[in-house]
Length: 69
Image 1 (cartoon, one colour):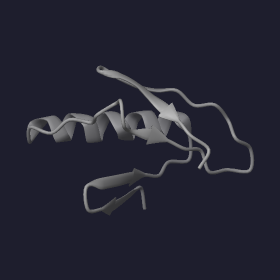
Image 2 (tube, helix red, strand yellow):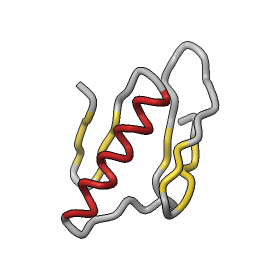
Image 3 (cartoon, one colour):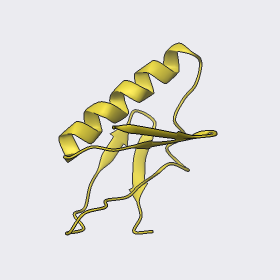
């Protein structure tokens, strides 16, 4: 499982930052084909793991904020 959808929200699940970057890019590009875009100003990222690593996810229209809860 790599994608959970709730109404107008999507949770992306990956085992590594590289996989998450690739998945985010794929969702972003697929969304554009239907006239949708990810709003980088309200979209958040969160690491759920034994260690809380800083993660930087960037889109063409901005960097996504990382939160802890």
